[in-house]
Length: 285
Image 1 (cartoon, rainbow, N blue to C red):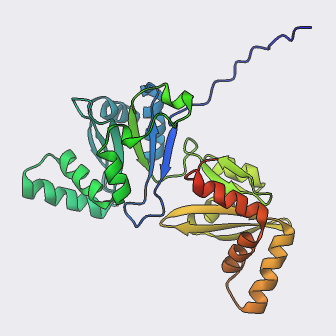
Image 2: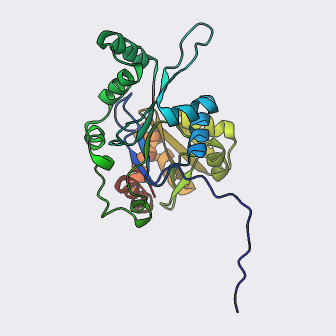
């Protein structure tokens, strides 16, 4: 008997990246995640997501992704609180399209570099940004397709051909997935505060505080623990049994609860499998 496949009008989720390399544990401000795409760019979707993520007007973002250039954030109350967003294009297509953000300090350095060396602001911004990156990432960016070995890539990724663009991101937006290690060792992806809150049965306000400030949050008899590493949240959820062990360890050895939770996680085979997978896959499941 044949099954009739039901038609669905649900829109397919936007896919912006099929290669993600995590360098978020590097020193600031070079602590970025390199998010790349080998498939053809969906310009409208790409512009929409980056516009939402970086608070750049949609029309301006579309123009930047098409023509390249910089967007300097406006002053707030006469004070500059944010730097600039940049999109770098290479006319010869020797390198993929690249987007990144400079903070206020980097922006000031880029302006000084541009004046001192008579450079366009975009070139100065790229110079300042590249200088902060980890040596491993610098080396990859100097190679075609970031030095990727297409023989080892997933076929669906490799068939796209050359890398079309790279977004150097630091945010936790609905379109940029991050992982949480669950009590049974599973690595569960969430994209954005709302989805993270739904997964764990907490309020968006609680989720926002946790991933921005770190610390612990009890969820029934279990607990969520978040460490902020170079401005990036690393989250794990502990079972009631492991949470009790950690509290007892913290009380008996006078260590901080977060340190006790780390000790318990490393002693738990299931959670260790999740931690090892996270390390081996660069933060991907």
